[in-house]
Length: 384
Ligand SMILES: *Cc1c(COP(=O)(O)O)cnc(C)c1O
Image (cartoon, rainbow, N blue to C red):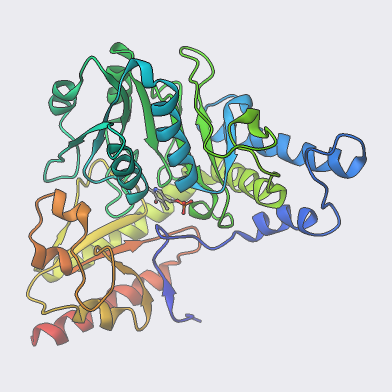
């Protein structure tokens, strides 16, 4: 039996995997200790759970467990990475290079720093959503401290040439931070091979709970220093004070472990369904794929629908299928998404763009339904 509505908004958030819930349950109930309590077994048990989770997150990203700092999510990790670098290395530069299609957490953090004299270069993207490496090289200055370019875009799934960007940053002694919130768990990510100095991830994008994430901070070649953004008891090596969210951390660890063991198989299965959906909808005509289809996450397709008035399409589809528009908001007068805009997609078309984000629990039956339903609605709205 098909349960409606169907959830195809896995880039916004994912449901919790039952195995993840099981892994966090003890720490929400009888194992409630504070991981910083050194004098009794409640504390030791919690500390042990945190230790395991740190290893599981490290294993998923090619990091060492001592390089993982737990945060409340990717947004906090992004703030810590960017502000932390800018503050601690203030004497050696004040320039950041980033990209027009970044998540708002990166763009707004940069905007905030601009007010205090930090200079930002916003790299444009090509029509396919990928930056031009020549633009990046040209943007580098003597006082460039940080390059921050996302691994995979949350709206289109487009992958940036991370390894190449990392190599360029290394060559110029510039730190490289990547927001890998959408990439981690879906495709192989390796901080050493990809020349990454700082990387963020979030549990609720990989079948874990909301409110927990992590920042990878490289400890050698080079050793990256950060200025903490939250001061207090000196947790997480003084980089992020505050009593550890042990249930959340245990859950993130389990989520990472599941991704690591299932990624290859899962990505193949999901990609097949995504490709089927995309092929069927594009075949209708007047439907185009946004973003590079060769360098893309396996689970998402962002489609623009022509010859549709206003917001009718999204309104009709979301009666039974939970998807989101490329638009940043759903108010009466939606602004077209800054991502699609940066890719040079016209406002009218951008407003009629929909992101389909498949996930671990998406079934073939659901995709069949989605194809039929979107086809039916499209024909109706186009009066054909
Ligand atoms: C979801 C997301 C974020 C924000 O993550 P939170 O953990 O919700 O703060 C940042 N960047 C990207 C690319 C995302 O998809």
